[in-house]
Amino acid sequence: MARPIKEIAWETVDGLCAIQCTGEEISSVLNINYDTLNRACKRVHGVSFTDYYKQKSQSGKVALRRAQFRLAVEDGNPAMMIWLGK
Image (tube, rainbow, N blue to C red; front, side):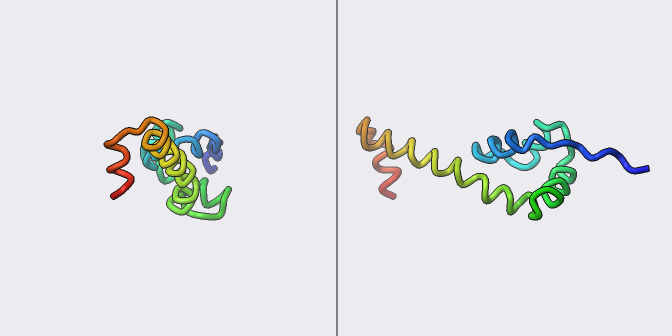
């Protein structure tokens, strides 16, 4: 008899991907093994967790870039201006 399938809170996974948490950290928060997360991702979304992570982490990168530009432009933060200029 097989084990029951673990339910994954994909909204939580998406949020953790957005803030650049690793797969191991995400699986730890969900209290599951990383392999279970990877298998669930393949079963539900049809892609490996690595591919899913790449897709979902982009929104976090966009939010971070937006915040950096806000600091540089609106606040005139010199360190952020230099950082973004590189």
